Length: 491
Image (cartoon, rainbow, N blue to C red; front, side, top):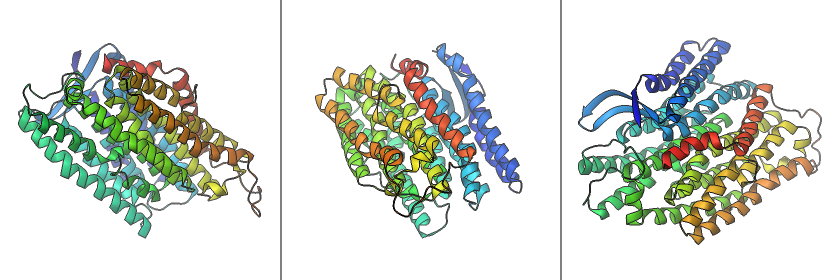
């Protein structure tokens, strides 16, 4: 591939940082404050989109900010793998800005300036992770995401909020500092560099390296990037549901959890490499390890009446699809895992947007209280139904593409057990998503709960959730655009 030395990666990352500063400077003018957020989001997306033609032509963007030691620098790289995450995250930030304005104003939430500033900083960290050229740069931006989203989780500043935020920051910082940081130091000592490999096969470890040490370092990274939600390091994720719904959408669809799985898969493919993982049997072990999360999180989701809690455990399960696909180490499996970064993002943000719209319109949080609401909130529950079908994997929706490639990958790898896991999880997906839509459209309203006064949430919320749902169908019917980037990764 041909490198292009360019400021574009730095400018894309800096757009969110500039947006955060402008939000704070315009804090006394709410309309201008939200306009600054919107312009920052559009600018970031525009810069990222401008790099697409060169990436598809086989080139990649590179910019070194500064070097610390030989093989240790803060450097940005934009390649096909980066684009899978960055395009989805930057576009969804545009949607989230509109949605957040409707949600925060609709509920007259406090500290809206802090909220918008931290939201922008979270995207600053997320795109920094996506555009990192080495493990050191990625680790720095990974930690920025953790710190900047803490105020968002604790937004309500009550006992529940502080407890959820404390659990969130303890889980994420202790695992990163206790596992990833020492693993990173050991990798540097063994290899003399933390730069990612240029392809997914070779990795960066020299021939003759101690394989036991490599295996230990691999699992330190796998569980150390705890934003990926692998059990038993997943508890922070349901606990963070005390945050406002736009934060939940950010956590579960755009920035935080995608930073976790992106970091995990980037390290799997570009530090260890498929050849070394296959030789040491790390792929098969990882696939079955995360299969436990896929099944157990789905079982727990079935038991949750609170809609956001059910969606949270769905996220825990769905994230492991991404790692599972990569761990299969077959082209089809890796394709399915990586494309799910995008497919899950649009579908899951739709679901959380719908949960927030339901709460703003009705102040209902529990599924048992939502019977009949679909008849008075057809756009919201229609979008929820579409996104649910995508999560289940129904043909015509984005999630079908994921599961099709994962099934092909499992068959190519000869892993019948993984086929059983994928089919079982799909049945469980139906079990915890279908009742929500059925109750909403066909269930009777609870006694004493009239329809009068119930209507759709503000347009600023309904429009983004509707668009996100439509896109989840479009990328299900026409998946080739994102698959171009994914197939460039697998070669």
